[in-house]
Every structure is written in C-alpha cells, then in structure tokens.
Image (cartoon, rainbow, N blue to C red; front, side):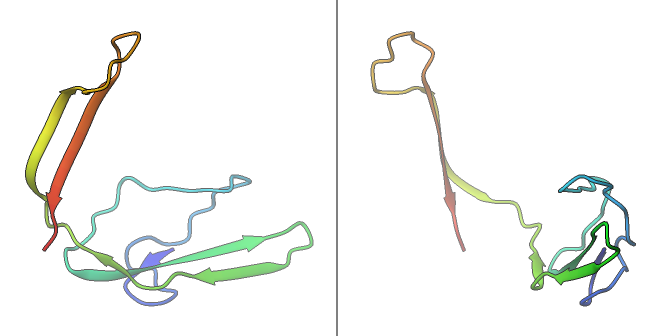
Length: 93
C-alpha cells in the first residue's frame, strides 16, 4: 500500500505480490514535495500476518543540476580497449 499517511492507500491500494519477495509499480504518479508512506503486509502458511510501515519518504522531483559530465575512454590502459569512464558531477543544493 502507498499513501500520504501511515497505512494510507491514497496512492495505491493493497496489491498482492504472490510468493515473490518484491513488488513494484511503474504506473504511479507522485506529487513533488510530498511525503509518502509504504505499508507492507506478509502472511505465512499458518495465516499469521505481519505488517511493516516505512518512515515517511520525501518525494523530490527536482531535476539534478549537472556541473560537469565526462564521457569517454578512461585514462587507464585497458587491455581489451573496452573500458570507458562515465563520471557525472552533480551540484547538490
């Protein structure tokens, strides 16, 4: 469950993940500068239920401020010429 309050379902109601130990939803629209809470329930074969609540998660949709991007062959000599360096320097405000 995903909501704006602890145990809330305003964003996503309960969805079973079956026997998987993970779940995801790529079809959720989050609102900038809000806090969301994740609630997870688990039920074992004896029908015992456990519930876990996340701490509030801050949604910050501000794009990063890239100061510098290095994209090219690394300075070290790669034996197979397939080693490349990708470095992003991001300004944190």
